[in-house]
Length: 63
Image (tube, rainbow, N blue to C red; front, side, top):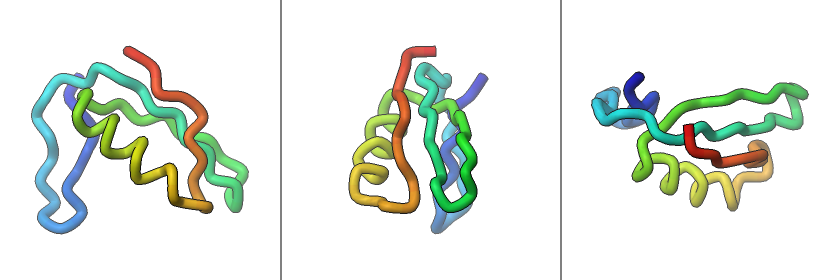
């Protein structure tokens, strides 16, 4: 499976292999979502989520 990251500006999808699964909780929707990313995008998403009160990182695990 490939990384599920899509560039929000250009819409281009990452073609690298997915190696990690990020589980994110959305409090306002009371919903948890798991998305698979390559190592680089998993790190970037984890950093982005650290400052976002609307999304809470539950886990970042190897997949």
